[in-house]
Structures are given as C-alpha cells and as structure tokens.
Image 1 (cartoon, helix red, strand yellow):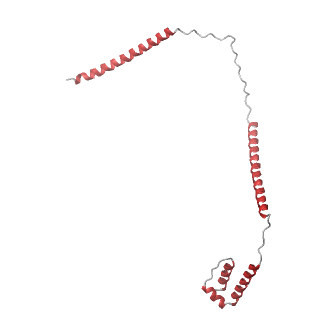
Image 2 (tube, rainbow, N blue to C red; image 1 turned 90 degrees about the vertical axis):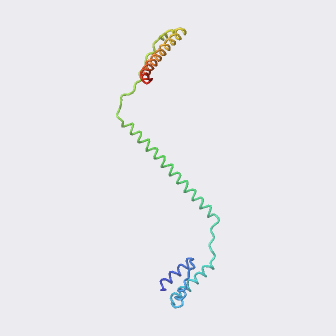
Amino acid sequence: MNCREAEELLQRQLDGDLIAPPDWAEHLAACATCRELFAGARQLERGLGLLIPPKAPAILSARIVTMVMAERRRRVWRHYAAAGMLAAACLLIAFLFFLTRPSQTPYVPVIAEVPKTQPVAPAEPPLRETVKEGRDALDQLTNKVFAKVDEQAGVMGDALVPLQV
C-alpha cells in the first residue's frame, strides 16, 4: 500500500467508513508521515467529540413552515397569473379574429305576414265511409295476394306433373 491509498482510507474513516484493511496497519507502522496524519485525525475526532453540539432555536420549525407556505402561495399566485394572462391572450386573439373578418351582408330576418283569416279545414268524411274504404282496399289487396299465390301454385303444379309416373 502506498501513501496515497492510506490517505484515502483515512479520509473514508473520518467520513464514517470503518474499513481498515490489514496492510494499512503495516503501512502506518512503516511510514512516519501517514502515522502523523493518523494521530492528527484521532486527535481531531476526540476534540470534536468534546464539543457541545449546537441547538436549533425553538422557533426554527415554525419559521421553516412559514417560509414553505409563503413559497407555496407564491407558486399558486403565479399559476393564477399565468392562467389569467392566457385567458386575456385568447380573448385578444378572438377579438382580433372577429375584427379583421371580411364584412358580410347583415342578416335581416324576413317577417312573414300572417293572413287575417284562418283557412277552414275540410270536413272529415264520416266514419262509416272511411271504414268502408279501408275494407275495400283490404279486399283488393287480399285478392291480389291470392291471385299471385294461385299463379305460382299453377307454375309449380305444372313442374310437378311430369314427376308423377
């Protein structure tokens, strides 16, 4: 192991890594410079252990929460401002679109004149006549269907006659 590797291992040990390979102890025994660095690091660790850690003020958490909430409000207002500016831009574009449109002839609604007298509806035929017309129409339709069936049956009957032997 060389001095550079020993210094890197010492730095890792100061960072909290407790890896100490066996060849490192051999190098410390052989190298006076690295041994001094190791002794200085141990003394630094002991000195830091004697220090009283600083205490956070009691209102620190309240201050942090206040600052975070203020930042959130700023972000929300930024979003509102951006949405408002977007809406204003859309309105401006729509206004300019309708302003620059080619003019068309204005729409003038035509008002139809209502006749003063209402036309008289034709009188409906009596119910008996309507039923009689419907019955006659049904009879005619039935006669046409039966005639068609008879015609087709005759064609089929002619086709079946040679088969009867």
